[in-house]
Image (tube, rainbow, N blue to C red; front, side):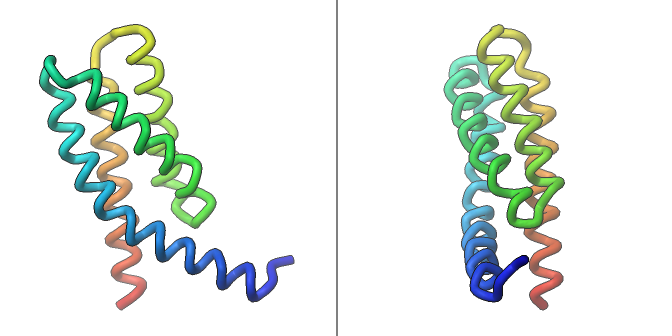
Amino acid sequence: MTTPSLTSGLAKIRIRFLDELKPRLEELTILRAQAEHADSAETSMTQIGFIAHKLAGTAATLGFPDLGQAAAELDDVVTFELGHRNSKSDVLHRADDLLAAMHSALQAESVSSA
């Protein structure tokens, strides 16, 4: 059973999550571009992994299952790639998927708020 105070509390957390999503999207876009370059790839992929990990745990709980799934998949790929020093192409591909999911979540929320 969900109480009104719990629902209200989750709504506030969801609003804060969305407010923080736009700067994370911008940061992820920059890190994704940096990851394409050999001299900064590992550092950028590590930071991408941190962002994905944080989003994976929170997004689905707050009603963004596609965003949570894309973040979890990216988190898994980054962890694997950094541990095995393989190609970064999977990380870049999954980062693109997460960026698209972030855009979709922000767009859907702006439409529902209007």
